[in-house]
Image (spheres, rainbow, N blue to C red):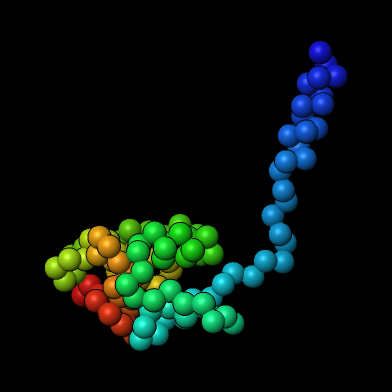
Amino acid sequence: MRAGAAALALLLAGCVAAPPQDRVSTLFLPDAGGLAVSGSALRVDFGRAPSGVIAPLSRELGPPRSLPLTGCPQGIERQLAWGDLVLTFTREQFVGWRQAGAAAGQICA
C-alpha cells in the first residue's frame, strides 16, 4: 500500500511544471485601432469579442479589475482595468481604451 501511494505521489509530482523563470510579459500598445502587441504583427483590434480581448490580456497582465460604468456612453456594459490601461466593451465587442491621458474609441468619462 505504501509503495502504491509513493508511486502515485511521484506520478503527480511529475505532472506539475515549474513556471518559466525568464518569461517576459507581452506589452500591449494602445493605438487608434485598438492594441498592438509589441514586437509582433499581432493586434487586438476594436470590434473583437470581449472574450478574445480579456483572455489574452489576463494571461499576460493578470486579472483585471472592474470599474463602475458611471459616465459611460449608452451601450457600454463593461469597463476593465489592467493597471492604468482601461478597456471598454459593449456586450458584443471591444470598443475603446484609455491610458495616461490618451484614449481611442468609445470610453467612459
